[in-house]
Image (cartoon, rainbow, N blue to C red; front, side):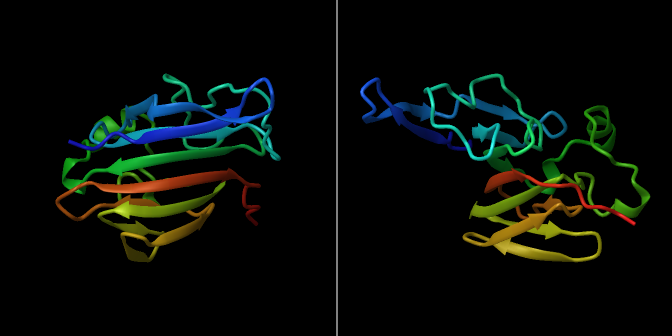
Length: 178
């Protein structure tokens, strides 16, 4: 059983003093649609850059289910993902039904191969995982950091236990292709 992610959020009271406005399990923790064995905990998001400190609205409430990229230009997404071993991934038909591109002829290296228009900071908190590109791959272990710059990629967990990773996604301009 995976340990829930504790989320502590700060804010300001009516007098402008710093306060804790939330302390507990991440309210928006859910299994990934295409891979139910994967747990995603959305911790925070921003919708503009620079971000606003006005108000104390929870930017990652239960049920938000934000997709991979930020929803607004200039936004960010902060989440933790528990990625199961590849042996626990759903079958290709299930993934396709949930919108995972499993038929891209150039990218059949892994069923979860995808690409986003974000700069992603990915940090391994626990376990190990293979970061896969179109033609290369590298093993990441606890404490390793990957900066993913809008490239096609997948995460392949070839171990026998989940890998817990932190992801910070920052909106970016799409790559202009010739």
